[in-house]
Length: 110
Image (tube, helix red, strand yellow):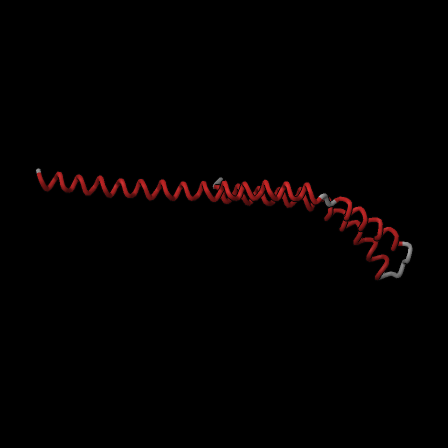
């Protein structure tokens, strides 16, 4: 698994962790919303309000901020890792060219 795949998995896991409970509540609310708006059943209105309140309370801004900060640091680490890989490859390429040039010079002087 390369670094981009790892980052994608991290983002997907974080997305599921943060928005999974809210999406579940939203799916449950959708049933009542259909009953209220499409069928005109007014008894579903308080259930919709209660579900929306649960959704609002399930959001923890401090927790979300900490998770985003962790994600940001993970992205920075991935970026630095990629930069280091490119530098190492360029350095190896430069050394190979230098070694080939030196071998050519030695062969020409011999």
